[in-house]
Length: 397
Image (spheres, rainbow, N blue to C red):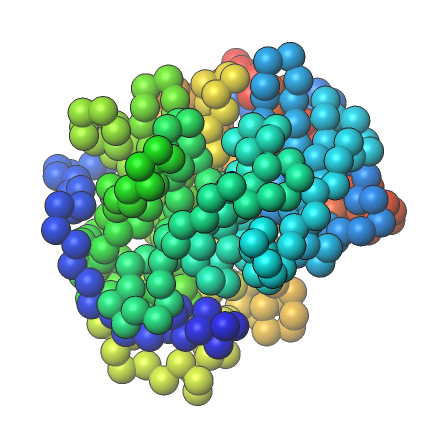
C-alpha cells in the first residue's frame, strides 16, 4: 500500500471533470499593503502526551460545544485517539481504534487525519486505503465510505488533509483539501476540493485548481497540496494553493467567486521547477529526485489557510524556506510566517515565528485564539506539548 501511495503521486494522469471548472476572469494588481494588525501572545497551555504519542506525527482537531471545548489527538503509533476537555493537560478519554474486524479501520498511518464532529462522533480518513470512517467515543464504526480508489487508473484526486490543511465542515457536508494522484495536463479542469454530503453520502468536486499550474511545472507533489478554510457565516470555501500568491473564495449557496491577493512580504513569485508545464511527461523522477527535492525545499510556498470564526480573521500559513545551500547541508526546516487577512480577505498583517521555537505544522484555532505548538519546549520535555495562544490585534498601522 505504501508503494501505491508513492505511485499515485508521480504517475501521469489526464482528467477532465465537466461541471467543476471554476474559472476566474479579469486582471488583478497587487494592492497597497500597510500593516495594521499583529498576532499578540495572550496565553499558553499544555496537553500531556500520556507517554504514548509523538509530537511530530499527530492529527489534531478542535471542537467548541456549548460551554465546553475539546481537543482530540490521533496518533498512528498507538492507533488511538486522546480526548482533552477545557484545556486540561490530561486526557479525559483514550479511544482505541481496531485494526480488523467489524470495527476495524485498518492500519491508519501517519498521513491519516480526523475531524471531531461531536464528542461522540469522530470522522477518520484512512489515507492508506481511501476510506472515511465515522466512529463513536467507544471506537465503534458507525459508517464507512470510500472516497477514492487507488486501483482505478483514472482515479479522482485524493483528499489530503493535515493540521495546516484540516478537514472542514458546515455540519451538513465535509470538505477535504485535495492533493494530486499524479500530474495533469489540464489543472484548470482538475478537482482540488472534495465534498461529501453527510446524509446522502454524495461526493462532489466543487472547485478546480488555479490556472497557475497550467503555466509551469512546480516539481514535487506537495507544491500542489490544496489548503481550504470554511466560513459558516457566509457559507464560503476559501482556497489556498502552495505556489499562488492569490487566494480564491467560493460561495456554496450561489456559486459566486472572488479572487484576492494574499502574498507574503518575504517572497514574491514562487520559482517553478521548469517553465514547461508538461515537463512531468519527460522527467525521470528516480534520477532527478535530489534536484527536485532541493528545489522544493529551498523555494518558499504556502502551506494552508485557517479561518478564525471567533474573531472573523483568516490566517494564511507561509513557509519561508532556507537557501538551496542550506538544504544540501541538511538544514531543511522552514521558518513559519502567518499572513493575517480580515473578513474581506484584505491583508492586514504578517508575522514570522522562529522554527527554533515554534512548530510550523501543529497549529489550530480555538475560542481563545490561534494556537501554535512550542517545538523548543517539547524537545526539553516530551511529556507535554505546550501551545502559545495568539490573537490578532490592531497595532495602529
